Structures are given as structure tokens and as C-alpha cells.
Image (cartoon, rainbow, N blue to C red; front, side, top):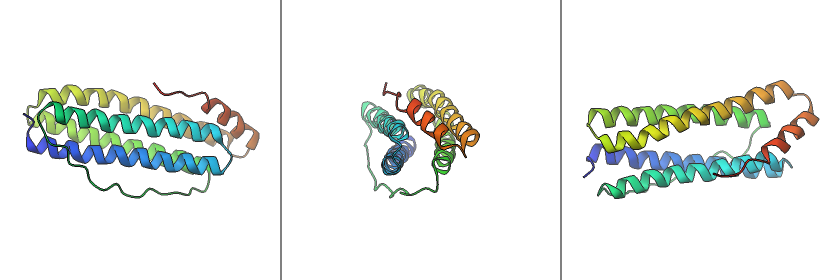
Length: 164
């Protein structure tokens, strides 16, 4: 049986993962409006991954005999000044998610919840990849900021991303 403190914290993380999905879906819609379908594709795939992350935690709670308690999802922002601003928000958001995952892992250690530690180790590794991907896009957008044709080239590259 899962400890209530861990269960409650994991339920909060489900909400954070679902908000991440919602935020990235909002960004996908914004990129579509800006006629950048590659960026929109990348964000839609990202939104799907975040929902999968929420479900991974959801299933973990249920497998441990716990109770999933879904909460309201905050409305995400829906407008950005530029693709760079949106990408910087993704990078900052992923850093916040990483901090949240680390705090959960610390709680699982404190509570000696070994199954949660194993599950959360996957998230720790995943967040390294998430932060790296966001940082790369930010860096590339900074390099090409003033050249719209270069943004279109990056848009084309991002359109190639597929879900796992």
C-alpha cells in the first residue's frame, strides 16, 4: 500500500503533468496560427508525452492500492511574442518540472517507498532529455532569430518528430 504523503504528492504531480500537456497543446495551437506547422507538430508530440507521463503516475498509484484524486487544471497561457519566447517558456517550465520530480524522489527516499523511487528514476532520466531538447531549440532560435528563412528550416526539422 502506498503512503498517503507519497500518494498526495503523486496526485499533485499528475496535475502538473496534465498542465504541461495543456500548456504545450496551447503552444501547438499558437504555432498553427503563426503558420509554423513543424513547431506545432513538435508541441503536439510534447503534449502527448506529458499526458503519458501523467498516466504513468496515475497507473503507479492504482497499482499500489492508492487513490487517484484529479484536480482542476489551470488554464495555460495562449499567446507568445515569438517562437523564441515560447521555447524559452518550455525550457523554464521543464526546469520547474525537474525540480518537482526531484522533490518527489526525495519524499520517496524519506518514506522508504522503494517502488516509487524506481518509477521516479525513469522521470529523473526523462527530465534530462526534456531539458536538453528545450535548451537546444532555444539556442537554435537565438542563432536564427532575425532570419525568417532559418526559422522555416527549423520548423521543417521539427515537423519530423514522431511520438514514441
